[in-house]
Length: 82
Image (cartoon, rainbow, N blue to C red; front, side):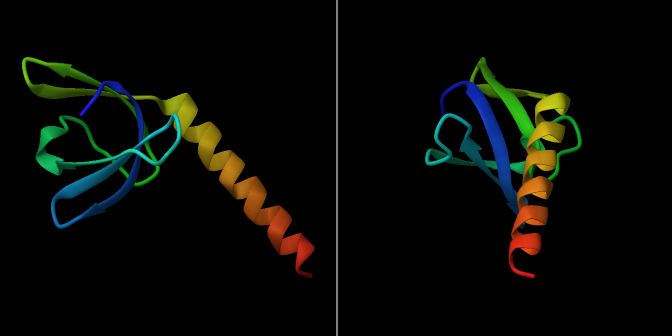
């Protein structure tokens, strides 16, 4: 795993699938218990590696921006299909 900004794609059965934000094609899977703060699908995190341990920081503003963009796109699609 490399350091960088990741998006939580999914959380299932104690595992978290992360996508690197640069292209959302690089995928990493880590155990949920490696996170010391609450996490949710769609969260944007800054991941660092320290002493072979994952250190993550929630990026709240970026997470909200992405959620707002997704909601706006969904609204446009709904209006287009009416």
